[in-house]
Length: 507
Image 1 (cartoon, helix red, strand yellow):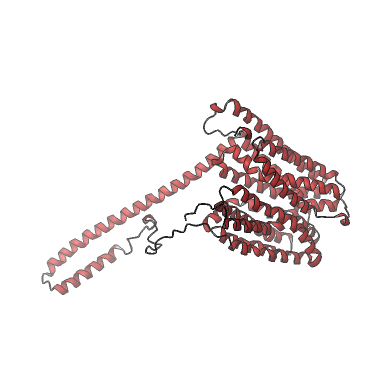
Image 2 (cartoon, one colour):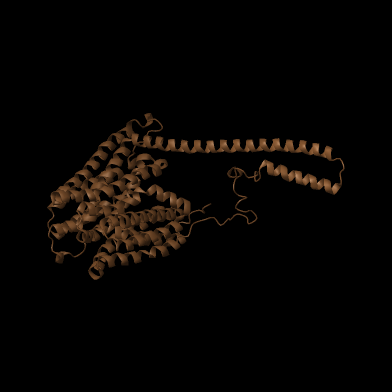
């Protein structure tokens, strides 16, 4: 398939709109799962740690399965994957309304909905990148705000639906709304070349000859000999040749020579195809070895290793507030009449603002993106330490806004990764980092919930969360500083395969 040059507009803006609404519809409920979390605690009576697995799986499984999602989109295209994933998300949400226990929710809401969201995220990003080149950053920034806007709206929407129709009715209605993803997916027209193959050639003619192992060996040698004997007998009957013994001897000599040639040809084809399979297997094995060699080279980079630890610790400590903040307010005995807006909605809208502002700041040459990212980590750690001291709705709302804004550092994370490993290693490095980010998303809320089940308070849990984020920030800062010093003094002495971080102002 040959793709046309990205138009940077035209139907591309339709792709941006439908991708925005796709992320809005698929991520709205999983990101605002904190509202459902309270209802599941009351409905099933399980511990907070066990119940938190539902939301953490829904948000982490898509990142953990990102390699599989990429293969699916590459193999089948963005439109079929988006439509199929729309059925997954809607079906998982509707199935969750009939959940008899928390373990059923692990499958229906955690795995099915989470995997569907991961597939949809990959599909929307892929189709957007195909349609945009010069304005790709703007387009990706617009569609990424769909999830944050979805968190803002779905937090209030799900609470209202629960009050009107109960938990089961809420999940059914939200699942029905997710069916609109099918309409969005149908508009994801692939950007293909208009030059189609000539109709004279069939699909079989275009397949290489190597793919047909026995292309010319449709009959066995004995069958060919039998056919030749019948052909010779028929020919003699027509020509009335009298010398049967002489003809029989000639036929036997001809058939024996054909037999030998057929066997030689057959053996040659078998040898050729065997060698072809061996070469293919060697090539695949070499690619596998190269992948792990490149991975080892990446981890030899101190900044990348620290970045890997920082993103894991950040998601373990920084993700739980978006899931558990509503329960934190209830545990603090805050009156529901003081609620002017759900805390999760505040996190959602401030995350969108943070993505926009931090993304704009990262474009300034005089701002070092890694310093900026480290600052967001350190401030997030301090805000997490302050949660146990918040005893009113106002203070919790302020902390929710701060945490939401700082969580917008996801928009500058690709910048940091690119500066650390280089653009040629970005795809490989980003895939590794996203896997561990998904692992952190999956482990963070259950760990905080287990701390509450153990101590019957959230104070220790958020002290642990703040410590994790601060530790990751300090490790990243300490690992990066020597590399910057080396860039200015010893850049000419670095071996060609050594990666180092460069200050943004010098780029």
